[in-house]
Amino acid sequence: MEASCSGHACGSGGGVHGPDAVPCTPHAPSARDAGCMGSMRMGRASMHDRAATQLAPVPRHSDHDGSRGITGAVPQRHRCRHATAASLLLLAAAACLLSLPLAAASPKVYIYDLAKWNDAEKHGDVTDSEYGLDQLFGQVLRSRAEYVTDDTAAADFFYVDAWLAWPYETHRLSDAVAELRKLGPWFDRKNGSDHIFVVTADHGRCHYAEEHMLIRNAIVLQHYGAALDGPQFKHRSDDSPLDFWGGDIDRELILMDAIWTDDACASSVVKCTEDAYGRKTPLMCNIPRQDIIVPPAVLERPPTRDCHRCYHGPEHEKAHLTPYLNPEANGRRGSITFFHAGPIGWDDEAFSGGARQTLYQTWNNAVWRRGKPPGDEPEGQQGFLIKDGEMGAKDWPHLWEAKWCLASTATGWSPQFKLAATRGCVPVIMQDGVLSEFEEQLPLQEYSVRIPLHMTYQLNRVLQYLEDKGRHAELQKNLECAWRLHWWRPPHGRALDVVMCELRRRSLLAQGDRSPLKTKMAINFETCTLRCMPGDEEVPLRAASEVVVAG
Image 1 (cartoon, rainbow, N blue to C red):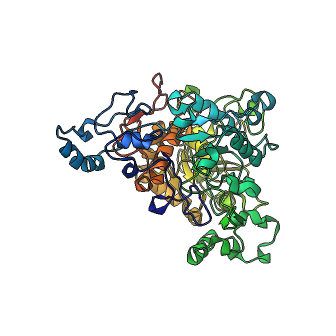
Image 2 (image 1 turned 90 degrees about the vertical axis):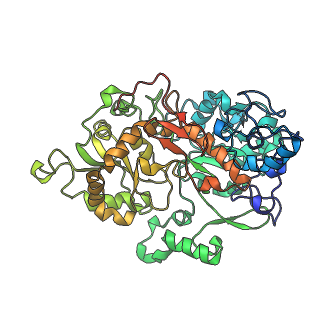
Image 3 (image 1 turned 135 degrees about the horizontal axis):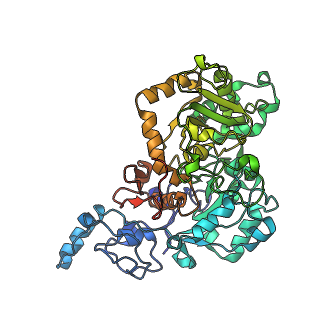
C-alpha cells in the first residue's frame, strides 16, 4: 500500500508528482489511512503503521499483523487495555491512539550494491580523510544489523553506497542514478525521496550544480550547512568590492527579497535550476529539514595510509588523541582562553564568510593573546591564540588546553566543530546563516555557543561573561557525554544513531505530523542518555566497556 502525495499531508522537500503537485516525502500512510484498529492491510506495514496500530504491547522481535518485529516497547503507563466488548474497543480506539506515543521502531535501510562506485581496492582506504564519510558511512551502517534489511519490500529508506566526491571525480551522479533505475523501481517510486546519499564535497549539493535536480528530493548527508548560497558561486572574490553593490552578497537582504516576492529565483544573484516541468528552483547547497548536516569521518584514529586531508605523518602523530579516550591527551585546561589554527583566507573574502579574517584582525593584537609579556595577560592564562596556518605538531595539544575553540566554515565546510567537541574544547560557532553539524537535531546550545559575526568585537566580554556565570564549566562538563554524538566509529561513536533517529522523525513529517519540528532530541547529561522523541525510553550513549578518562 503506497501513500498518496496530495493535500495537507505533504511536507516540504519531498517527492514531486506532476507539474502541479505539492512537494512531499511519502514514506508511509498515516495512521488514519492505515486504520487505527491494526486490521490486516494490503502490502507491507511501514514502521509508522506498526508503531501506531499497537493497542496492546507486543513482545520484542515478535511478528504483528504480518510485519517486521517491533524494536521498542511502549511504556506501561501509555498502554491501552483491550475492552472485552467490541463496541467499547471501537469507541475507545481513536482516543487510545491519540494518547499512545509511537514505539521506538527503528527504520530499516536497504543498501544498494554498487561495486563500480565503491571500489576500495581501486581507490584505497580514505575513511580517515576529511572527505572519507562516503566510505565510512556504509561500513558503520552495515555494522548495525538492527538498522539494515536486505529486503526492498521491508525497507523504509534506501542508502546509495556510491562514493561520489574526491577522489572519485570520474563518478558522475547521473551515472549512479541511471544505475539505480536499472536495478529496480525504487528510486522513481517516490521520486528519490526515501533515498539517502552521502556527499562530502566542500559545498554539498552545489558541487553537483549541473545534476542538482536528479537528487532534488533525496536525503543528502553532508557537512556543509549553507542553503541559499548563490552569492558565493558568483566568484566575487576576484573583484573589487567597489565593482558591485554590496547588497548583492548580503544573505539577509537576499532572503528578505525572496520572502517578499515569494520567489527566490527573482533575485539576480541566486543561482536557480529548472526541473523536468520547467519550474525554476533555487540551487540550494543544503535543503533544511531534508538534508542532514553530519560530522566528518576524520580524526578518530591514526590514519592507515597517507591521503588528502588525512593528517598523516610525524607532525600529526597527536591529531587523533582525545582526552576522553587517551590519558596522555590531558592538558592544562584553561591555560588558553581561545584557540584557532587554520588558514585565514586573506585572498578570498568569501572564505569562512569572513569570520576568520574578522576574528584575526580584531583579536590578534589584543592583550588576551599568546605571545604577549606575562604582565599583559590575566594570571594563569595565555589569552587568545589565533594562528594563520594549518595545524602542526605543537598545535594539537592546544585543543586539550583551551577553554574555547573556533568553529567556522572555510572554503566550504570545516571539521572545526567536531575537532573541538571531541577534544573537550567548547566550540564557538561563528558562521552566520550556516548550520553546524546536527544543529537541527541536537541541543547544541548545551555544549557549544553560537556568536553572530557582528559581535566579534565583543568576543572577550561574551566569553568572560559565560565563564563568570559558570556556563563554560557546564558546557564543558556536558561535552564529556555529548562528544560521542559527533563520532562515527564503534564502540564509542553514536553519530549513526542520531541519523537514524532523524530518519524516524522525518517519516512523521511525511505523514503531516509537524511535532518533530518543535523539539530536538533530548540528552540527559547526568546519565549520558539520548531520547529520540517524547515518550521514548532513554538510550545509553556510553559504550558498555567504556572507561571514562575525563572527569
